Length: 297
Ligand SMILES: O=C(CO)COP(=O)(O)O
Image (cartoon, rainbow, N blue to C red; front, side):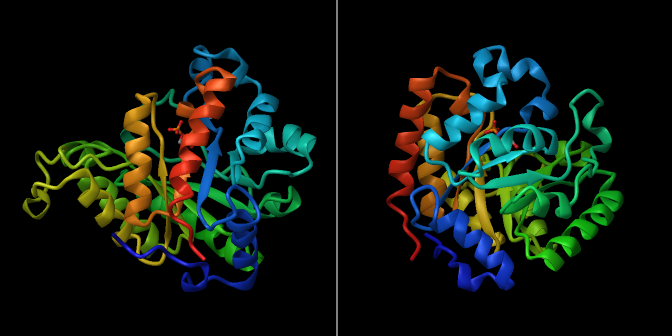
């Protein structure tokens, strides 16, 4: 088990620390762990994610769910933030996503263009911004360049920067795929090297080792894999993402292993809202029981 990071150990400026303190200690369980509700799938995947449970297509429903479920924050794009966020008077912290893309073009040269600014985030009362970085994409040079502008603005304005570190591209596919241990481990390290305050990763699949460099061809358990990912992030807090719908047992195991590895929290979307309201709240309650076991003073 890795030691859980404290806010005081993350090299944060005063503004970033104050905002992260609000997210981690004034919302959710208030124990230093985080449960975020991401709701950018309408842009990233299109309306198909809402077919299973059409109410989930309504941003007002999702923000209410974030409140009722006691989430630490909601991650949305600028359009929904402008139109819906203040209906709820900022009762749940806002993480404004600054870039995003549709899944209509292929991922061969994945790049998530920036369409909002850190100043937008300040104007909207956000407590953090989110940036998707496609680690391994042939468009890396452009990605790093636009990321640098966001990082510098976030630094200037005291705004915590959460990097969605997503391995992508043909080279990643050859080395085990985007949720292989190799790819997720590398992505966590990249976000830390590039100055993210928080990194969001997929849960690594240690069994997807084929065709990766020999150093990685080790018989890891999933716990060993997520432990190593959290270590690779160094003084960058780690959030583990949910992914597409899976059984509750699989999700709870993922949550348990992530928190035991020293992750700060979870960012689960479709597994929360692709089900009926009562079921969503029950599911969230079980996640909160897991987080409650890992307080960070
Ligand atoms: O952070 C996420 C999307 O931005 C994760 O969402 P899912 O849990 O639906 O995969």
